[in-house]
Amino acid sequence: MKTTIDGKAIVYCDGAFNTPNGKTAHGLVRFTERYEVVGVIDHAYAGQDAGQVLDGKENRILIFSDLASAMTQLGESNKPKSFVIGLATDGGRLPSDAKKTIRLALELGLNVDNGLHDFLYKDSELMAIAEKNNCRIRDVRRTPDRDDLHFFTGKIEEVNCLKVALLGTDSAIGKRTTSWILVHGFQKAGLKAEMVGTGQTAWMQGAKYSMILDSCINDFVAGEIEHAVHEAWKNESPDLIVIEGQGSLMNPAYPGGFEILAAGRPDYVILQHAPKRIEYDGFPGYILHPIKEQINAIEMISGKKVIAITVNHEEMTKEEILPACAKITQETGLPAYDVLAYGADELVELLKSLKK
Image (cartoon, rainbow, N blue to C red; front, side, top):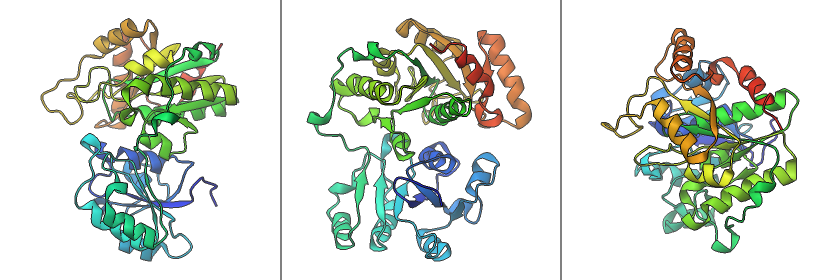
């Protein structure tokens, strides 16, 4: 049995699996140390294997049409302890039709983990059901008390291992997935690596050192990034720290990355890009800035080099991936890799050559 932080879990992603709005569920299906995922809820893919739907690789996580049928089919031996909301909707809002399923989860005695901006602790009806059934409701994006937050101090300059920021040309483009693949690739090579998570999904995946950038009070964002990076370095003595990016510098709704560059002080940047994506995620008419412009913006702001492009192969056939990588290299002069399709060995070798 898999050893995890919080035990077995079922992930709710109804109507969103295999779409950008299901990226939290995708992350948990691919990898998590916090839970043992025993099923996914999405009526559109009911009866199918989640790994096969997502990546063409079976992982024996079944997709169910609803929670009631999932609990019946899973049985007592695979009964989840947690009901995890795996949606990542625009603006982080909870769909109105999800509340009925959350209520049922609590009535069945499941703990509920919510990564959206609509906090369940404010719902007196749900909290009453949770109390009656001795269940925990955890709003992952709930801002910590100000006394628990950190202000930027400059201690980041003490961190003397290799630091890489994994930024993207858009939101929901695979930055977190690539970050984990890179960390695991470094560990496979016999080196020590840590990921600093900056979103709710990384926390749900069990990232030991993390903060949640988009719900942190602005004055403390830089300090929280610095603190997470410094703690990872101080406690783990890693060869590499990968800092997960958020949004993109030029995304109209999620202009993330500025604080990561300023406070995380990476030595280098890797940029995640989806060659087939034309418009910013969720914003028709907002054309994605060319990749060279995005590279120039990163390098101008940070004074650090973008050293590689990692490719998200959405909307691409397998035969299109390597030609797309070659085209990016021709356009930018940078090596391009699809680590999800082909592994991270080449990128790991590049980073090993830069290790301090």
